[in-house]
Length: 377
Image (cartoon, rainbow, N blue to C red; front, side, top):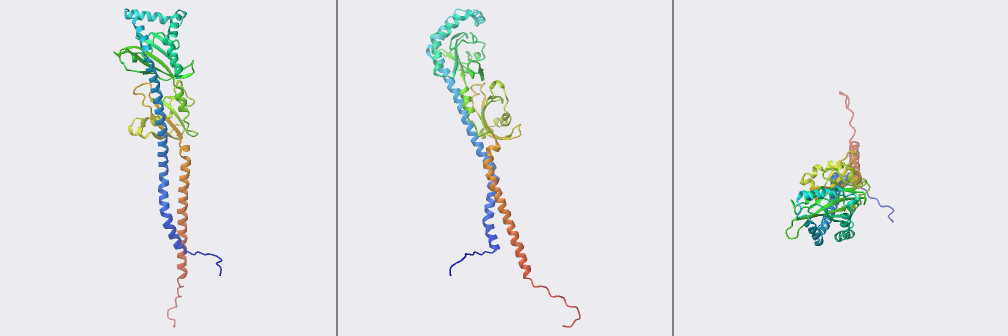
């Protein structure tokens, strides 16, 4: 006889027991995973942001280091050292007051036609032509100026604003008090080239003795660095930017250093920056003034120790709803499915319990009616 149908019969009690044995461990494990999913996702994304900021901080540090090296090569060029040495000889028989009087006289006429012959000599010398060649080979060098020991300009790629450099902020740093010092200014904006730049002052030292005999000043375009940071876009709301150690934004899309805007993220990371553990963690979760929660990664460039004006910190930030949303939605969905599974198991258990109780009550015999006392059988 052919088999028309296949029937599998199992009691509700056995089905319930099997479901309990299978679903309860899975549900407990699922609950554990679901409750820890948020923490794990935060750690994973936080580590990613830490990697981004540390990589950007290393790139920033390398960028500055390469420009300092370029200034060093210029300052140590033998022909440049020789030109500065020759310039210094003209002051050998002059007193300090006489040198100062000459400086004031030249400076007062520097922007008039009287200084044209001197300016022409400064801009057309062999050293000046070599400086312009250096600039051609390294386009990030906007302007280069060479000064002797008194601060007088010896050669330059462009006519400097001042003939004597002694009043510039970097001069005292480079002077003989600190033979190996290098001065780097804060970020400024150059109208002529329409570029953000820093000024690198490098000492010219006498060969052999290492005595300070002059200085090289190079204006360095930092726009390539800023462009690199701006290109580190993280999804839709994420961004990577540069701030100073006081919270002032150095570079961010739509923000320039001249605006002196304070970053909202700085308040959130300030305490973490002050501890070793916070710096090693490299990220925080914080609610910003706009009321939204953000994941904020950060990394110190490490430039401030050598260059006090470059206390730069790289920051990466993203709205947590965007950063964690897709993964957390899946975790929440899985958690919801487990809750529904437990609920269905509970309902099935209640049904089996009530059904079994009803069956037991149906099997009980009806109680005999009580006979009146004194009635014969």
